[in-house]
Length: 120
Image (tube, rainbow, N blue to C red; front, side):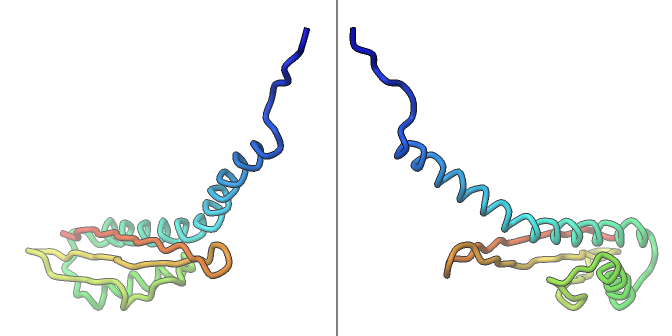
């Protein structure tokens, strides 16, 4: 009686592990820029919560954003990169930017981030 061998061959493992490894490596490379985005989003939400109902000028809002960026160690954006526009009786605060991270050799990953909050 002839026994058939079962299992995955070495070539099969390579075909399976290379894509899985590339996805894991991309996740590792992208984690820091997503953590930075979470800091920016948290900053905008804290400024909104702290100054909701206050009659502030855009300059004062930029100062509050800059202080929080310093505390959070945000380096990808500066206070002037945040758009503050008048919207009705309040303001719309927007962070709209791209961030890139090197992936493999001359291939990079670029991610677009958008966060906006309304300050009434």
